[in-house]
Image (cartoon, rainbow, N blue to C red):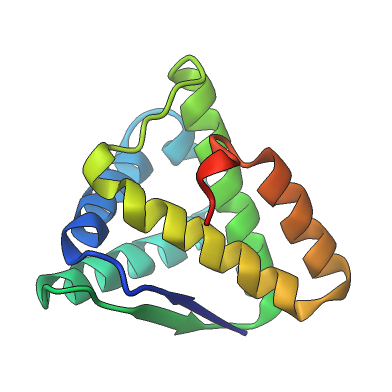
Length: 137
């Protein structure tokens, strides 16, 4: 399964990479991410930071087994929900990181939906309940 995000402003990708790294390493919801998911998130964060350094409006893509993507998307959703709840149900993604964040969420859910069956149902459910999800492209 492939997930493609972009083109998106490099500055937004870099800002989200910094924000995501901070959340992942802070006390709180990021600390509760299972170690295998945290390792994958670290790898993706490093990729985003590297791609963003090229500037412009880059495209980031990754491929993985659908089961892995589904697992990581659910872990990502849980962290997003818990961070937002901890903040009093307000947006916590910095404005300069917002474009990449929403493109990423949309691309992940679209990729799952394209798989069909239970993955499409899972994506539709998450799209409906994603914290602040009215901004998902």
